[in-house]
Length: 115
Length: 112
Image 1 (tube, each protein chain N blue to C red):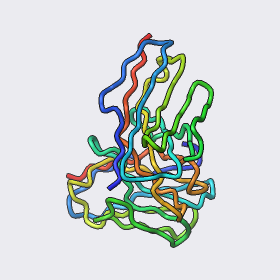
Image 2: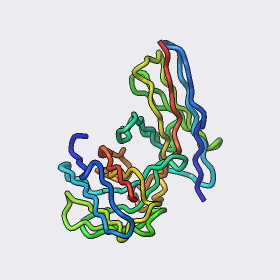
Image 3: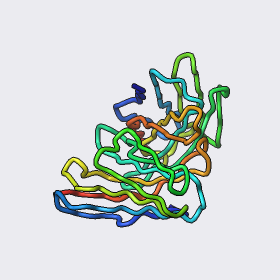
Image 4: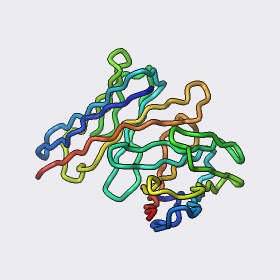
């Protein structure tokens, strides 16, 4: 079955540094991969989508890479701020040709940025 | 979240009773999804819809049913609630399958 692994332990970094979160997956070849942010008591918020033919995607201080050979995505937050503290979720589309957008999610990595 | 609302936000119910959760959207998006989120399991897909009256099962659909009679409403029913269905339930919408989701604020359901 499809499996997605994210850093299970919380990531603690100092303000201003770059945070790097990892998403590894097995037994699947997704057409695209998505990243979400979730704050306590709230629903996830969509951040970025990267397709299989894209190596890198950027949005402001966020950067995502997608290596289909390694079956891995890296999510970077540069110049991190305490407001970036949250849980970040990786998600893979498993709908194949039906394009129904069925996503499976990793369990998330909690990021804590200290001032 | 703008364009999608879930009701109720919190509910406590007794084992064996039926429960219906509602998801309402104003975005006219085709795709709607129900997920549950539990510690240690993350978000798991229960059911999804790709149009009015078009629904399909996700990975944890046992004990749940859904209906979508209008574009804007997607209902999740727990036919006979069990304690294992205590969870936070999220509804999500998407314009197209390959676009990001917009999630609702969630319903915290406790089955006692």
